[in-house]
Image (cartoon, rainbow, N blue to C red):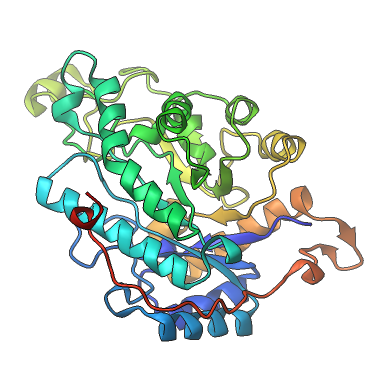
Length: 374
């Protein structure tokens, strides 16, 4: 079967679900990864909420499945927050929200419909600042996520971790920018040893490794393919920096001193590493060989969707819907020759490979919290 191309709906935060589905059909993709962030969360960057998670039950699940089948689209859901560190009050809310999304995924058919739940793990810097802090974060992950993954497994749902280090989650005055445990392959492999369940895995975004000067092809070579369920389509143009180098982040110092010395300073907590977010095939070249990357995925037997996560400076960051749609269309056209067979219409996803979501007709189940799982 051919690889479908999906869109992560954070790019369409200003649109309703129906409007986003219409855009997906216009762009020519085969699915949506629905962002379902908490309405009272701390994040304000690339977030969206495209399902009413507070009032979601079996009837809503049936309506969503019918809506997506009518549009000939597949779906997953997710929200990406810090679940093991940060503000303690928000931490527990993030954990409980992930449990709510697992319940929603179950009502939508879970693994039977390939409805996965995307998340971050986050990082606990109180532990991380101690000797052995990385391993202490692994053990905190094991404590927090063991009951979460058991709950998902019992409901027939798979949880997926995305690998962004979330370099801007702390002030630019801190020296470190590693703020999400799953930001390196080594951590993800250790996590599966700590929680051996088959009901968790990965959404891999190659762009994060590119700006860390790590070859995504080599990452896939060493990835357990049974864990890899999604690929994020997002790219990076690395920018050389003669002042701070390309190994360490830009550090904030006294602005007057920096001005006298003639050195650049970070404009925000996200302006730490030296790259520009791009989409493959749209406006700028990038620092990644997509042909080699897709070739390695095919060689290793990857069979999941490619999801466009549009954060590109020339597309999503313009704030213009025309540019957002244009960037997504360009990414689809750029990937098409790598993913599809050539026919008289060009390189196109074969509609014969589409199959509708099943109606699981699941009974309702009460929402649970971390206290309930203790």
